[in-house]
Image 1 (cartoon, rainbow, N blue to C red):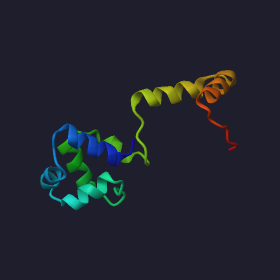
Image 2 (spheres, one colour):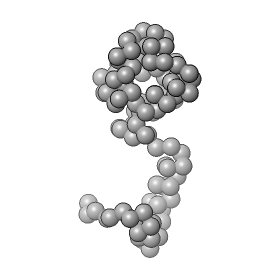
Image 3 (cartoon, one colour):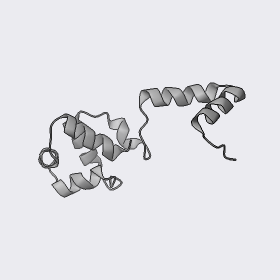
Length: 102
């Protein structure tokens, strides 16, 4: 899930339109639409703070690269990293994930 998806989903959970969010954070509906479609790399710090407050979102989500991991996804990754090679191999086989050379 991208940051734009999180903004959109949270806005809808709060029963807000794009216009509502735009009015609250003092921007335009078009800007909110661009954020939700993934164009957030130009977001000013003041706007990140305003959106975070308006949608009651943790500021940390704005500082992930592109994808946001939910706690269960993070825990799965951490468990995988700690697993022995046999377990990792089984997981890759189960998920049909090919290994890549680094």
